[in-house]
Image (cartoon, rainbow, N blue to C red; front, side, top):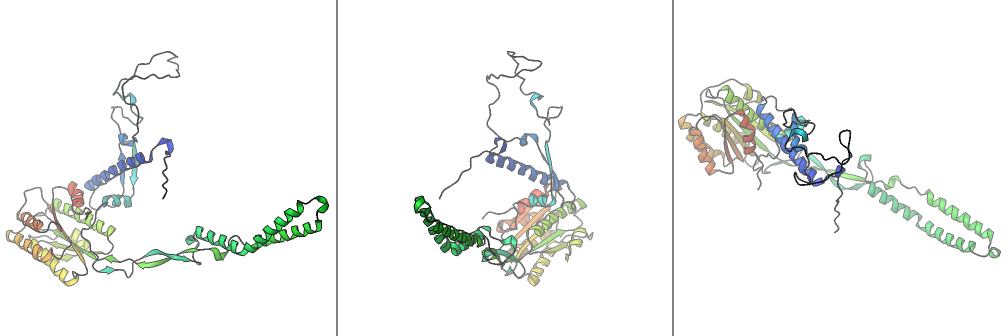
Length: 424
């Protein structure tokens, strides 16, 4: 096998490898800008693009060059101030004289390149390298989802499906097959004509030469009559539909709306669930979402009521876990569904209930779930629910995740930590 290595430089003597490093640096800035945007935006303003600023120092592509200092002689052409033979002082190092056109008067560099990413690009970067863990194709759905795959070639199809190379090969083969005998005969006649023309003038038979030339002309016209490309030669890519099975999954969103959850805490919980909702809607088409709100009583609600209802009360976290268990038993058989859950709370719970939550999770729920994530939104010391969940995490380290969130700026970081793509 032969390898072709293209060592040509790009425009302006740029290296492709260095350019890739340059673009990789841009990607870091875009990711950082997306993270900062999510932290400062409202919960209803996540599906918009973002303005990206690239600092001036990162606009430069790395290259080898002579460093500062040392001795060097340069011959400059001169101008109105200098003539040949003048010696010019080296400019002071570290000053503002060498700054680019984008430098500010204070001597500090400013952003020199600003561009806007679209809403789709914003969401792509927001959910880059995230995935629902432990997804297993238990029950596959493929009745209405198909993907096209190459299934050979056909003599019929649309112009966009023409295989140009195969069509030209077919046309060339057809022309050879239809004209082979004529070409052989033509070659023999041309050879015979050449011998007759090469004879001495007194020995030439002009009548015979003219007859040969007429036969050669007739054969050439017959060869030219064979079409260069016929409809029969056209070959089209034949594409067949193939069912695209997808795994079924359900995500339970459990939010504490008790009286201890103040408006700021609820706002952070909503941000978390909106991120989760967008992530699932964008990446998993076959995933159902079940919304559960709870105070002392848990209720399955729709999306509107989950995010905007103002009902509140005391706190019994186990009521939500029990309701989730009932819904799983009624609607989501374990052999068919990948089951996930995400819970947000401030950690305030009735003392006796935290042990009940641990019991339900360890014995009834986690053996059935693919993944359970819990965020506790509080700047204060953890309460009994957190400590009970720590014991759950010790027993189920691969399927249970828990994180603390203090303010809204941490939501995106915590979200990425919980749903980062796991490498097996």
